[in-house]
Length: 432
Image (cartoon, rainbow, N blue to C red; front, side, top):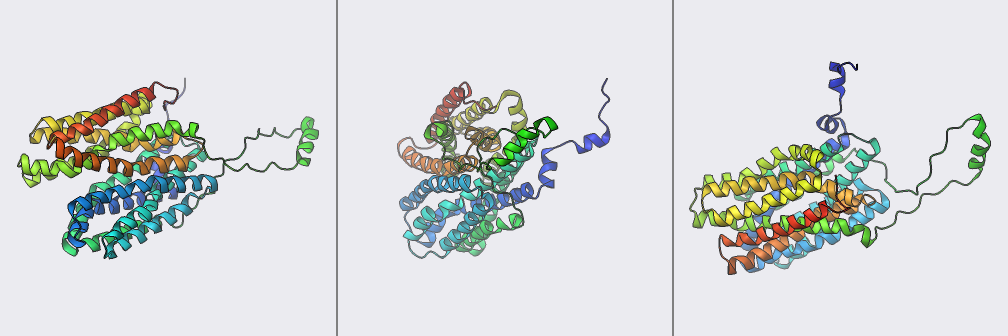
């Protein structure tokens, strides 16, 4: 009968948290992504105010700024494809972080209306690929070490990005109020550049997919002639990694498109829920702030739990439930009309992102395992498309449906996502 594990064995058992702390790569990626989330989330709510108050752009024109995000998936794909060909994950990460620094500083110095639009579409589009390169580097290392807690490590690293989004909007608002929008944008650039610091002395070997070669047998006296013959043959050179075909990319693109439908409700919510609570429901400022702030807290709590549940029922089936939570959340916003309904909707929305934030990048990488950086870049840059879709939908929906019925639109998007994810979960592309 096997004996019970000793205290020393329990202490040395692998855990995701211990693995992240022990690895300079994982630990550095965690800090870097926190800084990325901190800077980006600080600027996101302030961009419109900067355009209107500092550059004197009309509200209609300011709303069009979010359409510049549609170049981010193109830039992300280019960076990801280059990364998969060269294997130089962290080198490209540093260049993308530098692009973020230059872009945000240029934004802070902008004096003409057209400048933020061009900067966002051309320079900042590449900065978003920095995070995808970190996830690709982490994935490579986890695969090389065959870590038994790989999903947990990715979840912890991803939680750092979410944690940045929890505190970023508050700090950004305080800094913009105290020093102005331009200083706040420059600080966002500083956060982008600071991502390089925790990764500065971390290096990983270049990851180059090679042709499959059968492992050589162990040398024995009876196999000596065969070994000598193998030694005389010229060494097989690694094959140049090929770009994934459209057919190979189809599952990833389908999943990413469904993720866009899930995410499209976020810009609608952040754009119109505060107005609805203030102007229609007349909720106190403290209550409205608590409603907005409860989602990321629920998200952080649920992310580790999502990893555990996914091991039991599968990632894709769990994402069906996550998308369904989003439908329920938007119906709460559209139909309840009181503070309790707003809290319920935000708690459900925390469930959405507790699932998708923890597992989305893992699913994307597993749907295109031969091009990890490409998969990471396509998935992470899809939020830009979702923001553009949500902004356009919210603008049209408010003018036709009004508040709060505009939230029926993201509820419909959520139903599309639920249906599509349910189909994928039953197909041969399902991810366990």
